[in-house]
Amino acid sequence: MRDTIVTLGLTSIFLLSGCVTTDQGQRIVGEKATDKASTAAMLELESAKAEDTIRRSGDRIIDPNLERYVQTIAEASAGDFGEEINVYLLQAPVFNAFMMPNGTMGVYSGLLLRAETEDELALVLGHEFGHYYEKHVEERFAAANNANILFAATGYSLIGLIVAGAEISSFSRSQESEADKIGAEILPGTGYDSAVAIRLWDNLEAEKKASSIRAVRKRGSSIFDTHPTSLERLDTLKTLVGVEGPLPEPSAEKREAYRAIIRPYLLTWLEDEIGRRDAGSTLHLLDRLDAVPGDEGTLLYARARVIDRALSNKRLKKDKLTRKLMETYSPETVIELLEASTSNADAPAQAHRELGNRLYKAGRHTEASRAFQVYLDQNPAAKDAALIKSLMLKSEGSS
Ligand SMILES: [Zn+2]
Image 1 (cartoon, rainbow, N blue to C red):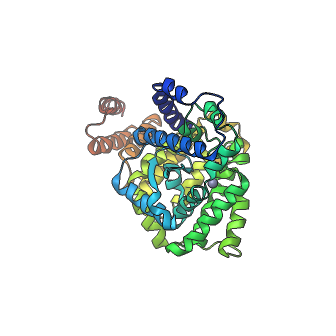
Image 2 (cartoon, helix red, strand yellow):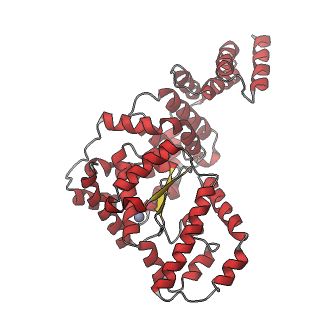
Image 3 (cartoon, rainbow, N blue to C red):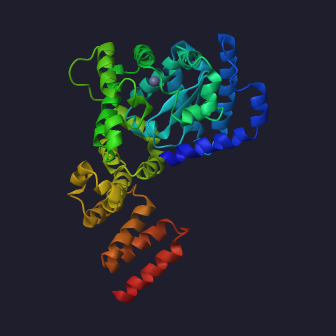
């Protein structure tokens, strides 16, 4: 999770280091951005630079269809101000989104993966629009008295602030509530169902509690976890949209329609999640993703990978909650999950390879060869083809 964000940060620092002299020449460190106009002008300049960094970022997801899809939702959730928004998609397994004073909106893949319906995504984007509409970034900078100090702390860039998850994204409690209110109020006029949408916060809270990392269980891992907490936010939103008691479930149609949009990325984004090494959180996410049929091969493969990695992760073993979670799992579970995965048409080629590896290690050489063969058939140009073939030869020799 951190790696991807750091890449984005380093990219921006790298880009900025090229023009640091002129930057500092224009804006003397310590100079006071006292009047509103100069703060606004500076934020405009910084926004344009940050947007440029995002546009060129290696973490940007460039997919006209997906970009247009999210752009359309963002525009709808911004009511009359839709055309001011310019959406960029970023690949990182975090539940985050942000909006800059020039209308640039960043949406992370970790959020796209966690939304279960378009309504949920619209609610978050509407919340981000709320910050933009209420000019919260501008307020933060004006309140900082000397905006240059804020920039200096983060490598003279707005993107630095976003990457650091600092300041721009750490709005005050009242600013967060204001953004929630705007997001929830615009939604009904857009055809989205706000009662269904707020389940997202419920899910986020439950995932946080399921995390294998104690600090995440306590404080969460998303900028949305800070002010107010997801629980308080959920309560406020329930009142705002007039829901009492349990939240309504979204229809299967809504869930399936949304899954169809993100399906091409499901495996890639899940690989990113697995890289976070938070078995509890990822298994919780997988349970939710299981609710929509059609991705069994991919989801079972991801589950096998998460469990496999957690079984050998010493740090996770130290965590009581995770130890309990892993009690029922063994290397045999991993084989069973991979076998179940590969019996589905959507199983990725890697599932066959992993199954081959596990079976080989377990001494089940004939079955291993069969799984390897399917992998090579599906992926003839695989980089590891020679290695796999040598394992197959060994298997045949020993069986
Ligand atoms: Zn917010």
